[in-house]
Length: 235
Picture 1 (cartoon, one colour):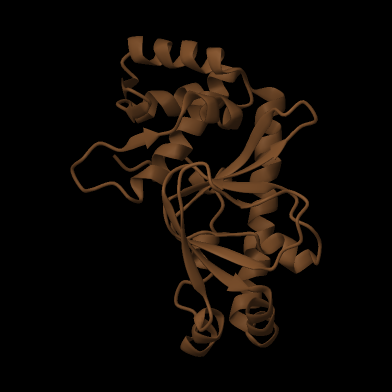
Picture 2: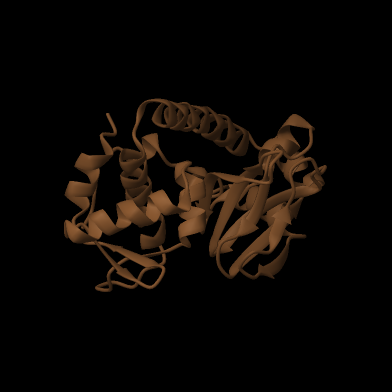
């Protein structure tokens, strides 16, 4: 089921997929002429918080988490990126270190574009520069909404909203006619929601009893997206 018209996904999800879409051929060739690709297995780190960037990363397929680790070693997932998205470009644009870390949530194929190729193309491409500016503005709005979510919503509401967003992300690679499966560990889901793993397990059990979701091992299938949206209290 589509959530178009009943849930404003753009308020809660980045849209960097559009940055490379239909770029002028010359710009796309300039960006990708020297790119390299690498497969990252689940848990493999792509870049670490505090490291200096040497380029940007384009997710060909798979799922990547961006996260911070506090002084006690506790992980907080900031964002989950999927196929078609760019990561790592903020540090390149700001000429600073990576502000967070990125690691594969599942087996993922990722393209690497050098900082030099990215900046050179950006300097002469009006299309790319406009798209990046628009994307950065949108990401700021998404992060502002996320901060409000953590400050004003219950764990149950936050989990419901994240399940709605994750369903849309996993739907990208789902086969037609097959239920969308959110394939994420309870630990990572708790890190994304900002709560304890035990709380996530308990609320998922409640959702299951209410007929909202079904679970198959670690996989979560949303059965009643409308009810989940109502619980999320996203407005």
